[in-house]
Image (cartoon, rainbow, N blue to C red):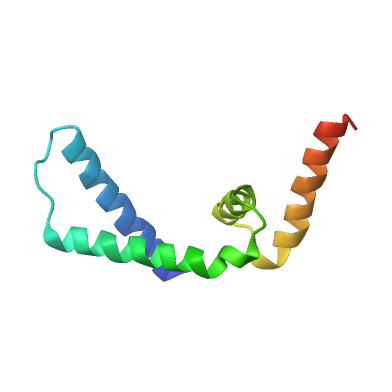
Length: 95
Protein backbone atom coordinates (compact mmCIF):
# COMPACT_ATOMS: atom_id res chain seq x y z
CA UNK A 1 0.00 0.00 0.00
CA UNK A 2 2.86 2.39 0.82
CA UNK A 3 4.47 1.80 -2.58
CA UNK A 4 1.15 2.60 -4.29
CA UNK A 5 0.74 5.84 -2.33
CA UNK A 6 4.32 6.81 -3.14
CA UNK A 7 3.72 6.11 -6.83
CA UNK A 8 0.54 8.20 -6.85
CA UNK A 9 2.42 11.06 -5.18
CA UNK A 10 5.19 10.88 -7.82
CA UNK A 11 2.68 10.84 -10.68
CA UNK A 12 0.85 13.85 -9.25
CA UNK A 13 4.17 15.72 -8.93
CA UNK A 14 5.09 14.92 -12.53
CA UNK A 15 1.63 15.90 -13.73
CA UNK A 16 1.93 19.24 -11.93
CA UNK A 17 5.25 19.83 -13.69
CA UNK A 18 3.66 18.96 -17.03
CA UNK A 19 0.86 21.43 -16.36
CA UNK A 20 3.31 24.19 -15.51
CA UNK A 21 5.19 23.60 -18.75
CA UNK A 22 2.07 23.42 -20.91
CA UNK A 23 0.69 26.64 -19.38
CA UNK A 24 3.99 28.52 -19.76
CA UNK A 25 4.95 28.78 -16.09
CA UNK A 26 7.97 26.53 -16.41
CA UNK A 27 10.16 25.88 -19.41
CA UNK A 28 12.19 22.85 -18.37
CA UNK A 29 11.92 19.44 -16.83
CA UNK A 30 14.75 17.54 -15.20
CA UNK A 31 16.20 14.48 -16.94
CA UNK A 32 15.61 12.48 -13.76
CA UNK A 33 11.89 13.27 -13.96
CA UNK A 34 11.72 12.15 -17.60
CA UNK A 35 13.50 8.91 -16.68
CA UNK A 36 11.18 8.35 -13.73
CA UNK A 37 8.08 8.88 -15.85
CA UNK A 38 9.47 6.54 -18.52
CA UNK A 39 9.97 3.83 -15.90
CA UNK A 40 6.44 4.31 -14.55
CA UNK A 41 4.91 4.23 -18.06
CA UNK A 42 6.94 1.15 -19.01
CA UNK A 43 5.87 -0.63 -15.85
CA UNK A 44 2.22 0.19 -16.54
CA UNK A 45 2.48 -1.09 -20.11
CA UNK A 46 4.11 -4.33 -18.99
CA UNK A 47 1.47 -4.84 -16.29
CA UNK A 48 -1.36 -4.32 -18.79
CA UNK A 49 0.27 -6.70 -21.29
CA UNK A 50 0.44 -9.31 -18.53
CA UNK A 51 -3.26 -8.83 -17.78
CA UNK A 52 -4.54 -8.71 -21.38
CA UNK A 53 -5.80 -12.31 -21.48
CA UNK A 54 -7.99 -11.70 -18.43
CA UNK A 55 -10.33 -9.35 -20.28
CA UNK A 56 -12.76 -10.08 -23.09
CA UNK A 57 -12.83 -6.51 -24.37
CA UNK A 58 -11.39 -3.04 -23.99
CA UNK A 59 -14.55 -2.00 -22.12
CA UNK A 60 -14.05 -4.83 -19.61
CA UNK A 61 -10.50 -3.59 -18.97
CA UNK A 62 -11.84 -0.05 -18.46
CA UNK A 63 -14.46 -1.39 -16.04
CA UNK A 64 -11.76 -3.29 -14.11
CA UNK A 65 -9.57 -0.17 -13.84
CA UNK A 66 -12.53 1.84 -12.52
CA UNK A 67 -13.40 -0.99 -10.10
CA UNK A 68 -9.83 -1.00 -8.75
CA UNK A 69 -9.70 2.82 -8.53
CA UNK A 70 -12.81 2.69 -6.36
CA UNK A 71 -11.09 0.26 -4.00
CA UNK A 72 -12.59 -2.97 -5.32
CA UNK A 73 -11.02 -6.17 -4.03
CA UNK A 74 -9.78 -8.74 -6.54
CA UNK A 75 -11.95 -11.47 -5.02
CA UNK A 76 -15.07 -9.36 -5.74
CA UNK A 77 -14.24 -8.59 -9.38
CA UNK A 78 -16.18 -11.49 -10.97
CA UNK A 79 -19.33 -10.65 -9.01
CA UNK A 80 -18.97 -6.97 -9.93
CA UNK A 81 -18.37 -7.83 -13.59
CA UNK A 82 -21.52 -9.95 -13.66
CA UNK A 83 -23.55 -7.14 -12.09
CA UNK A 84 -22.38 -4.79 -14.85
CA UNK A 85 -23.40 -7.33 -17.51
CA UNK A 86 -26.81 -7.78 -15.84
CA UNK A 87 -27.30 -4.03 -15.66
CA UNK A 88 -26.40 -3.61 -19.35
CA UNK A 89 -28.73 -6.48 -20.30
CA UNK A 90 -31.58 -4.92 -18.34
CA UNK A 91 -31.07 -1.60 -20.13
CA UNK A 92 -31.17 -3.20 -23.56
CA UNK A 93 -34.17 -5.42 -22.82
CA UNK A 94 -36.08 -2.82 -20.80
CA UNK A 95 -36.32 -5.05 -17.73
